[in-house]
Amino acid sequence: MSDTLSQKRPWLAALLAVLATGLGHLYLRRWRRAVGWIAALVAVSVLFVDPGTVDALLAGNPVDPLTIAPIAVIGGFSVVDAYLLASAQNALARRRAATDNGELAHCPNCGKELDDDLEFCHWCSTDLEAFGESGDEIDTEDA
Image (cartoon, rainbow, N blue to C red; front, top):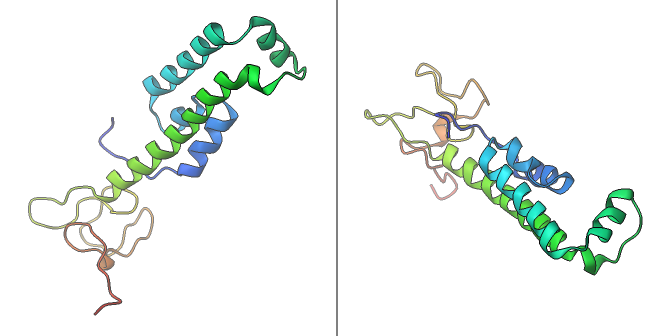
């Protein structure tokens, strides 16, 4: 994985995965995982779905939904995986480690490197005063 993790939209990753298995993972720049989902889809199609049904599906002809259920299951798991992966990547970007002197080195919102002279992220305009030195958001309602 790269040094900088940017925020990715989980809903967009899921939508892309709905459109084509593996596409949501390509959006997340997880190449091997995308290839793995595509390989799983092809393997399930070859092993568990009648070739005539696949041909009819590709031709746009109506098919019995139960005959293509294995393909739908793999596609569904791919959608969920892309969504959860984007959410986890965003959480990691938000929890980016602070530098040795206790100041934030990366934005807790977008994960990009911060300018020490600014009190906000110049990439996403997040107010950094709302975050503690560890990058955790400070609850101001209880104070």
